[in-house]
Structure formats: structure tokens, C-alpha cells
Length: 169
Image 1 (cartoon, rainbow, N blue to C red):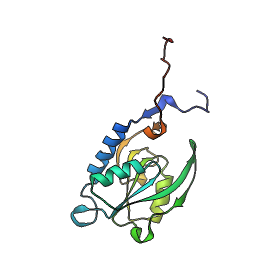
Image 2: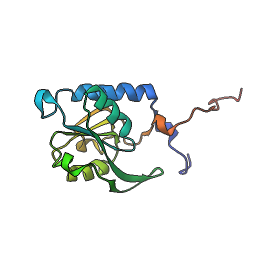
Image 3: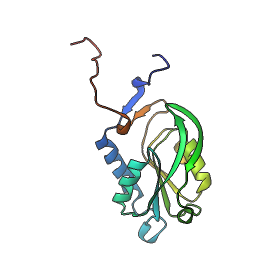
Image 4: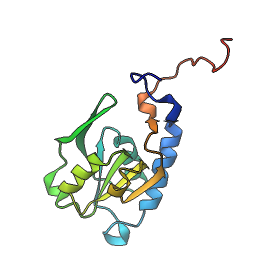
């Protein structure tokens, strides 16, 4: 396999239905675990862009009406770079993170969550998928995948014809 191609051999394709089911499973794990009354959460903060879909689903399932975002850029195409915040959530909402549920689609190396955790050390960090290197940065996740697996999310994909492994007809 040439280095300019995506690692299809270790690809994990996630459909819209699957991300919906997995994000709902994440919500079930988080239900009643917040520090507020009856285990409630103050707000959900999605890490853009991948965390927006699961953050919306979690906020809906847990009836959390305050939703904000933090934008962290740590990838350029498929190359990981130094993580940096490009948009912060509301300061008066966040404090040290107490009662805040921070949601992302995936933790890979953990560098993004490490950066956000330094800013909001008391927040609860939840991802739908986790790779071993980043797992220590996550408080709650649904599915672990191997470090060398590339996850293909539905918002990155388009339906198209695929050549069969053997033969051409």
C-alpha cells in the first residue's frame, strides 16, 4: 500500500445509523452521572467538528439545553499537527469545567483532549470511539478501536461504486 492512500485495510466505516446508536449509548452511560441535581449536567460542549453530531445527540437524549462548542484544530487532511484552540466556549459558562460535559467523536493520540483538559480540568470528557493512546484522556467512551484503525465517519464519505476484490463483472 502506498503512503499517499488511506489505510483501507484497517478502516472502520461508521454509518449515520451507527453513529446515532453509538452516541445514544454514550448518553446512556452519562445519564445521571453529572454533579448537579439528580446527576444532571450544566452544559454540553462539542469539540468541532467531529464532536458536533454526538454532542447534539447526547444533549437531546439527556435534555441538556445549553450547548456550546470549542474548536480545536489538530489535523490537516490526515496528518496530525500540534493542537490549538481556534474558538472557545463562553467563559462564564465554563469556569473550571465543573458540570460540563465535553464531547468528541474520537480520541486518537489524546492531544486534543489533553489541551482542552488543561483549560477545563473539572469537566467530564466523553467520546464515542477511543484509541489506546488517547484513552487515558477520556472519562467515558463507548467503543475502543486499535491505534492503527482509521475511522471513516459518515460526514466524510460519499456513496460510490467499489470494484470487487476479484474480477471485474
